[in-house]
Length: 634
Image 1: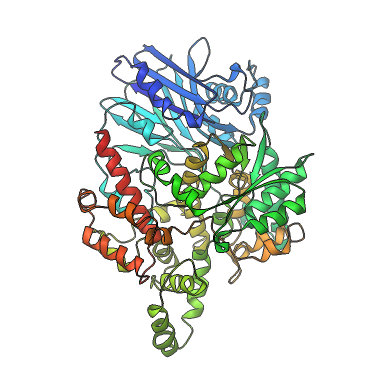
Image 2: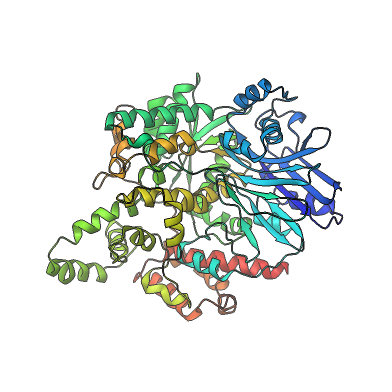
């Protein structure tokens, strides 16, 4: 793992080494083991690249970056890991190419030297990289198939600048910092800005499965090199038993690939289905006990899953580490985490993710995670809600409107009580009156509830619908749930979950690997009909079939629980002062798109439990905190 940064000056102007080194210094948490900078001015344009390294494979000086080969002709900076780098070494050896180290970075460099961007199609792993051919004066930026590793870039004043983090990109030079109006709309509605956009008009986020070429004088257009398969191979659908076996085999092989490391390795274990599957396979593949890590909450059992984690740990004989936190511990890390984000981010679960990452890093350098299972196999409430809504609408109108809806609309809402949470979910269920499942999904995915829409002065409907239709064009039109899952795999997952995990884990110099996001596992999931994944009111149905008898029954039968903290309650109490001091009229109205009076009404409704707006209000807190930091920098 690394943090990478670079400048390509197409006008050939000198590049200040301090810009590169100071940019990487802001990312030393991503790679505390080594750092380096390489500058070239002999190719027509000026090129400077730098990296800060977390040594995982070949931790000797042979893995130092930037890495240069071919008598100085070729250079690379690389953040991530190529799991099949040994296979690449064998393939390159057949063609007469010989590596000089055991580093996977060298395999990536040699492959790019040999095959150019076509090398990306051979990589099985997670990465963001920049490759440069000095002789031709050209190169490319690239990102892995599912967006596990980040890369942001900007083209300004005949320069291409790029970095792993937005804070590092800002440090590479001056470029326009205007807020993107469309990006702000997306952020307020969904909690994130869809790639290739960012909160800035000028800055771009490289989409997953994409590379960005550049030549001697300019940046080219992005090229997509991979598409998730959306139909069964040859049109044939396997039977349920065969499908379950295929999923289980693909996950086993994926975990096996992700064991490669020259440093200690372990796994997060929440006690949920996905992390338990990863631990089961890791234990199967490991001779000694696997190190597993769980975080629980001392004050509130509703947010604590450690009893399930302990049951899984006992089943597979892991060396289990458990941390019981108090909510004060979460509140204590909030200011530093908001500073670390570098851009607005709505997902408050970044806080417990950072805590478990810090905890795991005391014992290992690499941890496997269960992220991606929900998007592939239909684990979230909003996937099941389509069937719930259809069944609800079959009830007599008098019962629905006259009794149930009247009662639920009068109920107070909260995530911390069973009745309050049911009322919250029910109101969200009714939020989407669309017959079209794709439009329903977009409505349910929003953090901006109908009773808070006045916050946003310019409110276009369904800004992601065109993106959804474009990214899922290869799906069976008669299976809208599969289209929804594929959209979340390519947009929601990299923009929210994977972004969160990267920010939180790398903050503590921990590499997190994601076995569910192996191309073979993805192919096994995306080519199945949604009916095998979502069976009535049961999500991840085929996944549960695949591991029945392997995992404890309690894990297979339990309801989905998110890795959350009660941020809604914090905003009503412990964070009230911080929210009011940060989300002020001046800051809110400086965006020109938000209504402060509507913000206050929404916050008052939340505090009085007339509404549940935890995600939206945390998004506003993060947005305004970021804005104040921006103003302080300028």
